[in-house]
Length: 235
Image 1 (tube, helix red, strand yellow):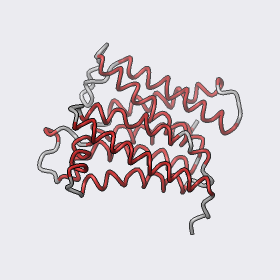
Image 2 (tube, one colour):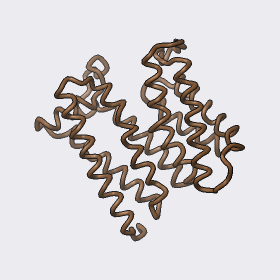
Image 3 (cartoon, helix red, strand yellow):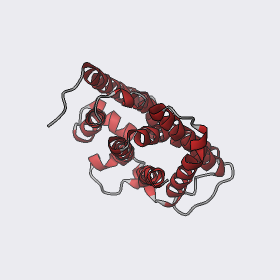
């Protein structure tokens, strides 16, 4: 049985629905104006960080899952509907043509499925240990995109077989950014000095960095969040 939602829960999820549809509209408009789908997809996690910052305000973790389902709604519609707007959105959120093979149209949206899977992994941790899940979600929305942005510069490429585009500055940014965000999350929930926590969160950030490098494809990000959360739990 679901807990009774508070007015704040309802308001936040109404905002999630409105924000998710606005992000979908912006994505469709950008791809129609010639912006590359990969660039559009990179902007999504930082936009979703606005919602993640509200996670501690929910009265129960189940309402985070409801919000995640609302974010998934435009993804499902883009995979099923054939009107011009939804076709443009599918182009904006799809993997490159050479990676699609003979898959049906809904499977073209793999980059967004991986994004939702990463948020779902953080939400699962949030349900069990809120301070871990909140920090992991912020790391995914902020530290991971920052690492990818630095990877695009191509400085000191690490040439991993699974992800040859990844670079040393990108991985250092991921480790430090994730460590700071996870330590701040623990400070938010427990009110303790975040600096002594940095050793544990740095180790978790390193675990996430290694997983991001070695796990093939887009699954590397949800897998990295899984291992980062497990590392924090063990420490």
